[in-house]
Image (cartoon, rainbow over all chains, first blue to last red; front, side):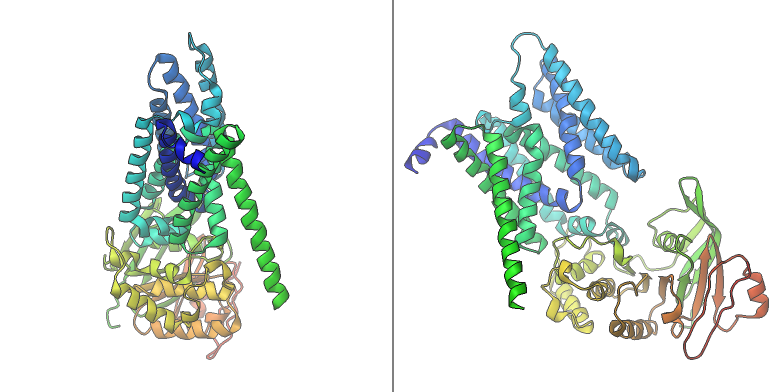
Length: 277
Length: 251
């Protein structure tokens, strides 16, 4: 334990821990909406499309995360604006966006002269490479998300649960859904740093799904998801250090282990209830 | 109840999805005191008509005008029950409180008056013991009750219900019909149903929708009118006291 505490003396570890907590709040809040609104596949499409922007910026010598953020937000706006009319084909459009984004990213990074960047870092993340600036930026996004949530909590919940009803109550449903998509896109980009493009979906889905098994009020799910996200990122970080494994997969697999444990105890509990009846 | 100028007026409205026309030049007026049942076969455009009235869809042509006040929550709406995700993490009280959304307006939190209104409506529908039950644990009838409570908690000026008897048990059916009847003393009630039978005793007007719309005001159902309402292939037998039977529209 004291070994872990001593580790906090290192700036990069402190950054990783603080970024981990920020990411946890992001996944808790955004992930809950992503899960209940069934935006998981959309978020996957956006994160992979973002890789295209990342690669292009890398090639031309701009900040890659900026390219990823821009691409993610543009994809979210496009899907929010055009995607909804043709419900059935949106699925396929997301799939195309997903693959094309990845293809563009890989080609541009391959063609980048000089030092070849480590693709693995973007695909699977490395929380230990998070800089102080990136960590602060992630907290800034957490701030924006929490303020928006405080201001529009009842509207967001209503839109997530029942769009037509919310519309009749005067809520601008289309803007709210597009807003959620943009926030999800930004969250995805920030989380890429931690767990990478391929694993980011785990951080958005595992905490809310586990929370929904444990508590049943919306506010409680938001809070518990954030807490579970923190257990995932910090626990995964510790596991990564202790077992000398990459941090991204450690975070994801710790979360999955927790999810399985929750599902299993709930099954046992339900079985006991049935037996008692 | 003396004001008979329409609260909602649909004029010559045409609407469809893609290239397919679902409603073809339909007109309808909803007035103070009305208890209107919108009936017709599945896919005939009943729910589409409701969504046009609610402003959720915009007509291709024609006009939808309403004189319902612009106050938040002036429209009570009970959407089709089957469209709900029962795994959504929401307790009964949270779901009913959602009905105060329009009353409260943006950037304001729910307050004591919202809680009082929610308590009152929970009590009225026998939902108090279920207040903190997750909606996923409710029976179909209980969830329908929650949705109706949610629609009424804003004290609306008009109530729209889409298939309100779906998944409802016989016991709550009577409670619901009595509630609607009582509500109708104050506000117009419009409901969409594929099965007219349970509403035969309470509905005062009937709109038969199947691409076209045929309107049957009470007591004016003459043989000439039945001749007129051609091409609405709905079998309609209403049991109730008094018996009112609409003849099969001639095909």
